[in-house]
Amino acid sequence: MTELPTSPFPALLVGLPILMATMSLFFKSRREAVVGLTGSILTVVLSVFAIVDVMRHGTVIHILGGWEPPLGILLRMDSLAAVFIGMTAVVGAFISLYAWWYFRDQETGTFKFPLFWPLWLFLWAGLNGLFLSNDLFNLFVTIEVVGICAVALAVLSGKTTALFAGLRYLLAAIVGSMSYLFGTALLYGSTGVLDLGLLGQVLEPGTTSTFALLVITIGLMIKMAGFPFHFWLPPAHSSALAPVSALLSALVVKGAFYILLRLWMEVFGVSLTFAAGQLIGIAGAIAVVWGSWQAFMQTNLKLIVAHSSVAQLGYLLMIFPLLVLAPGVTTGSADWLSPVWTAGIYQVLAHAFAKSSFFLSAGIIIIAFGNDRIESLRDLVSRMPMTVMAIGLAGVSLIGLPPSGGFVAKWMLLQGIFLSGQWWWAPAVLAGSLLAAGYVFRILRLAFAPAHKKETYRPVPKGLQLCALLLALGSFLIVLPADYLIQFLETSEVFGSGIESIVEGGNYGNN
Amino acid sequence: MEAYQIYSLTSAVLFAIGIGGVFASKHFIKKIIATIIMGGGVFLAFVSFAERDALTFADPVPHALVITGIVVAVASGAFALALARRIYQLTGEESFNNEK
Image 1: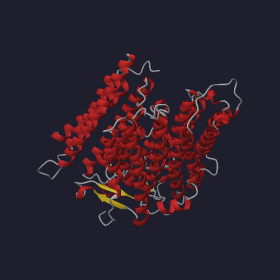
Image 2: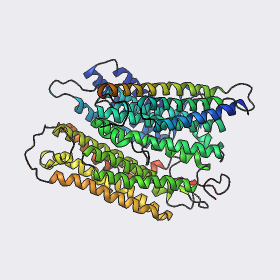
Image 3: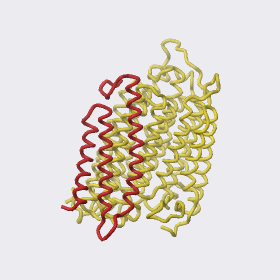
Image 4: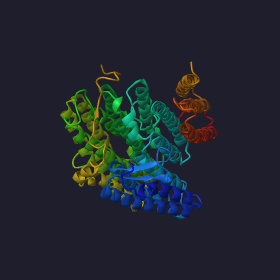
């Protein structure tokens, strides 16, 4: 580990947002927002420098305070972490700008909900820390920081519905993190190490590691709202303020997915069986169909978008059965690993851009009409063409039509499904896309339909609409550097690898 | 039966009681207490694993982890209580039953 080049950036990526968040707490209203926005911009700049650093030197590490592990904390930034940090930076930058205009009172120039800024920066620090962490316990701490900040942001409006949803979210998050911590305790108890790389080498198959795998996976599934633990997501995401909804759905749930991916790939190789992969894949497939169907049935824009998150996260779970190889198949002979990894990364990126854009557009519609019933969208195209454009582009990416990022994700996923011979996942992918087309065109049809009567609406600042549109465009632009992105990701050890499931040894669900 | 086995089994039982309580009980405070019991089980598991074979002294790392874990659990428990209190003040509701 120590032969890797050291860089100050991993520490700064966590430290700077915390510093700016704490500083913003000393100020009130307008100044708090100014410090918060400055902090966001600085963090974005820092993220760019850090990513350039990783491009130049490959994986970089930082040993906090010079205390070598196992006593100290080691932060590791490889290309996979860099991509997630980059995604957080780009999506976070647009949401920050949007929040600036969204929370500013146009008449008085004061800022509503100034606590948004410190909470968002703490959340950002937690996310960066999560992507950089290299041991089980550090991951627990960062996911708790992320979880508590996320709930605090979700209840920011103080409305009753948001409070109910927030408490449900918090209870689910606590149960999830306690399950995760229980698994951590079991792993530490049986091996005496917490470092992910080391743990992957010393972990032996057996009852303890299988049980640890089970509780950790369930804990993280609760956190990322994987079916059947998705119950908290739609109310929490739909009742939050628009910039918060965008943050929660684009970034927060991806944190838990990132941990799940890292742990399955790096740690649990010995305890995973083909059946375990199939099981999580089934959860994903049901989430895709069920979430899309629920989204199709809703009549409120924000609920449609929130339910669609459940479905889009389902696609992410569906990459796991393809990564866990059937007994007898080796990583070398599995030619579908590369497309599956590409699908996973593009699904994460495309969903982050498209979903945040969708929620920001929903916020614009709430400002304009005072509610988000899709009936109010009638004749939207003549009033706010930019927002209709944003909804359309984001929707195309969610459906997975070319040339969007969502198309790359779904196409690569299908390619991986057929190459691996696990054809039974294909119907779920196609059904999800069809249903997504259903709910997106339901919204767009109304946007182009003539209005029954002249409804009054408040004009919305152009800046807000521009942020949503640029994010929607982003879900298309990510396709352009695809070759380069995949090449960059291949410098990471985990990218493109599969899990060779055991035939002898553990014998759990795999005889 | 050795001491650490008793602790480990107790921790598993506590964890199970807690996770059952979160789903089975209706009242907010009961749900929150259940999560705290879950936490208690996890921390007990950590501490019981501190007695490792071939060591004459207790492993300090689990203790450091438990301290951190307790801080996190207290913070999230307090936050949950604050939310429950606010809901009670605004609506008089004590459970998710009549959620709107």
